[in-house]
Amino acid sequence: MARPIVEARGIHKHFGALHVLKGVDLEVAERELVFVIGPSGSGKSTLLRCLNRLEEPSSGSVVVDGIDMLDPKTDINRARQRIGMVFQSFNLYPHMTALGNVTLALRKVAGKSRVEAEALGRAALKRVGLADRAGHTPGQLSGGQQQRVAIARAIALEPRVMLFDEPTSALDPELVGSVLEVMCDLRESGMTMIVVSHEMGFARNAADRVIFMDHGLIVEQGPPVAIFENPSQERTRAFIGQIQRH
Amino acid sequence: MSTWDRFVDTFFNARVMAKYLPDILSGVVVTIELAVLIVASGLLAGLALALVRALAIRPLNWLIIFIVDLFRSLPPLVIIVLIYFGLPAAGLSPSGFVSTWIALGLVLMAFAEEIFWAGITSIPRGQWEAARSTGLGFGQTLLNVVLPQALRLTIPPLTNRTIAITKGTALGTVVAVTEILGQASSAVSNSYNPSPLMMGSAAYVVLFLPVVVAARWIETKFAWKR
Image (cartoon, rainbow over all chains, first blue to last red; front, side, top):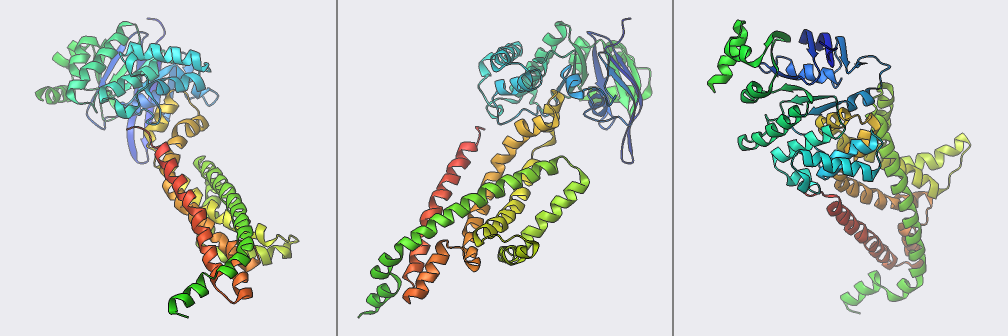
């Protein structure tokens, strides 16, 4: 196997007395789609946020695309351009249009001219099916559209890895499909993706690997079929049983 | 002479008004100059302090909080008097105009800092995280994402504070600043008639109505489509 594009070793994270991550190792290969599931409070979001250093791990190492994310000498802002992130609550800039949201980092970080940035921004909006919404502000868009703008904002920077932190949890059920569709397209284009989500159907169809986390540790991982149909750990079985009942 | 005539003669005496109109007008000019200087320097200094505070350097923040709390609690009149009569002891002798400017500028700075700071902290953490995750630095995020949203929230309280502090220019009379109230009250003593005070009041209203209207206009302009 080629060198993994994401390589996290021995990640611990403390929030005061709370020990949220207790030594997590995660390797993700290029073009792989890894799904992370687990009960709330299991540390899956924190793990994701440690990968682009939105959260500073208490110990351990994170290397993404050959860049040591925790080295103080690393230009973290440059490194983060290569790691797109999509949030549960979209976090679009409400004072800017969809195009403004997508082009801000292109102009300010990637150093593109306004004309260049707008061309790239429109292309990114087209990829998520929102070419005709470029001039709308977030308040004028549905939740599904907002999340797709957020995805466009991330992919416009041509990241090497995309992190999705419960991208559909804040959406009305009928809007989930449009976002998953965009994520499928992204996967088909060969994007490396790490997805924290409970969309089991999507995981079955699209994921290469499913990781089950509980109490700050990876309990079990494997192909979706193995994890969903035939988990080896009791805790995994209990969790899968619980979410499938609903 | 009827009661009404006596009232008009006392408070709206045409002869007195005509005589002292130039004085009141020169007072208006001084008030405007003072107000513009106070508002510009106070708001800028307040914004600067709030931005420095956002850097979260602890000893610096303690200092900022101390300064801000001090100038918010002292009566502005006391600060004017302290600067005017106190600074000469330190070898500086600011005029009444400059003393009033500095004092009210400091007070506005203190209130404005708190208002700007409240605006900055009211922006959800997700906005910072989204911007930082795309590679924007701290300063870029503050200027491009957080501040534009924060400023919109701060406009109504800043307007109130700005109007209040501008009316405070009248306190300059105690250190002989010839602004509206100063001109009006010396005209009252010279003419033995309170009509100049009525002119002064009218001047304040004429001065501040456009400010209030302008503030409303800015508020609607800054509101973004929801």
